[in-house]
Image 1 (cartoon, rainbow, N blue to C red):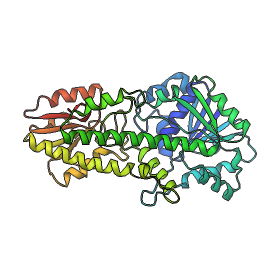
Image 2: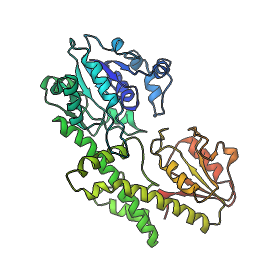
Image 3: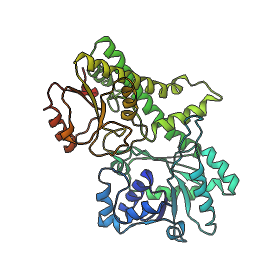
Length: 402
């Protein structure tokens, strides 16, 4: 098929590379000229494992093109247009900012003589799309939804090996066209209505955030009682109804999706319905980070150490995404109480607002080193070798702490 993708961010670029690898002709549009120029020069705008190798692969390179205007990407041969722009949330009001999405739909509506299908991958309440369509006189029923379930750090694997594919809408021809794109995938394809497709996305992320918060509250509870958190969590996860997957304690969760989506779901419900469980997920995460900062300060005192160095600045392993990073939030909590708090990340450049350890040569003795997330890369392993050489120092790995 001939596919146009609007938005060269995380979802758009991964989706485009995936469809190009499958033999489709893909053009990606982004109004950020510098970003498009970088992509045309094979420069990656963010880190994702294997992404650069895919884009440089001849099979992909011959099928993917990058433009900074719609007219170069969309013509009468275009079969589908995937909308992959950001839908940020105002955390004070909980409302979704649909400015980017509306601008795209207005632009696509100008191609009124073309017969491409509009498929929205951006995470958004479909009722907001319906309102925009009414405002700009675009036929809402022709729009379909195909939410993404890509994990940063393993997004390309997830694209080619999805647990399920969800497509929502009411136009049979558009749904069939989207299904054809995925006909080589062996997972279950779930065809549903527009509203349900987006709720599946929202509630999947809400449940995962709740699960992570449950694990962290368990870790906190067990630690305060003096038990072995990891043995307990492992035993709980042996119950097939629960499972061990995504059941790892952490300093907290963050990223571009979970905080935003949980906040939006809470906002959907708070006006008309009581949802005490969902409404407390974000609060649980914030309280856990408060507790974890105090936990580190207690560990520092118990071991008679002089410094705290947080290893790993992004919100999780195998990414350089700093959005809602627990490391930065915990650093702020610690720095307000303990001056000798530092962040160590040899891949990501941070602002001067933070005290940084910028090279292995700057490692400190008498230090509590805290691995914020597991990382099996050679770079991390070499770093830990050097850390272990520091006198009177201790490495804390929350997921291995007893």
